[in-house]
Image 1 (cartoon, rainbow, N blue to C red):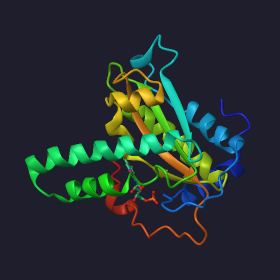
Image 2: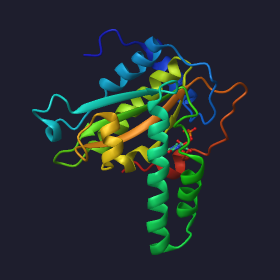
Image 3: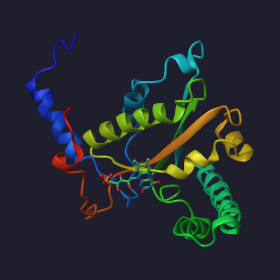
Amino acid sequence: MFEGINEQHGRALDDILKARRTVRAFSPKAPGKEDIEAVIRAGLIAPFGALAVAGKPDFRKVIVIPNSSPVIVTAANIMKNRAGHFAGELEKKIGLAPFVQNLKRVAQQGVPGVGNAPYYIIVGERKGTPPVAAQSISYCLHNMWLKATSLGIGFQLVSATAQMDSDPEFCKLLGLPCAEYALDGCALGYPAEGYQPPQVDYPDYDISVAWL
Ligand SMILES: Cc1cc2nc3c(=O)[nH]c(=O)nc-3n(C[C@H](O)[C@H](O)[C@H](O)COP(=O)(O)O)c2cc1C
């Protein structure tokens, strides 16, 4: 096992791990289809909850919506409407909390990453027992994120996708049976010229880690 893996690979992986950032502004120049396929293939070899999806070869679905496709407009509108309804319901329960305010902004301006990046990609994972579909999608998306980084392609998670898994209109648009797949998504494209991600304070080793 691990034949062919050497120190050089380790250093390359460290470089990619450090270079990975969330990109929130994209260049209109779209990455080529081959690169997007390579990113998706990296996602397909991510770990998955094997027992939860045993006997279901169609357990992982990836749907690519390029910005040039008319489908992106429909998807963006469905998501905006959904955010509006959700905001209304939540406001009745908890008032104008920051999360509700954000939902209202999304309902007006749209979901970041859907319609303002060259690609919106949705990953679906068949739900099962134990209920680990969301975790499996995270591994898939993270593989895609690292592969995209290695190709110089920017990546933004589109978490609002997860709320859409039981929306009949959205699932029909994707060609998925309603509520059978957990969903999550991302936007892909080259970073906008001059884009610099904000400084982030990652957890400090000494504060976060305990060896017992
Ligand atoms: C579960 C999860 C959901 C996230 N959802 C979004 C999202 O919907 N949109 C977004 O722009 N960033 C999203 N992020 C990205 C985080 O804000 C980001 O990873 C964090 O601020 C650290 O910045 P970095 O990714 O540049 O290292 C999400 C991250 C995680 C782990």
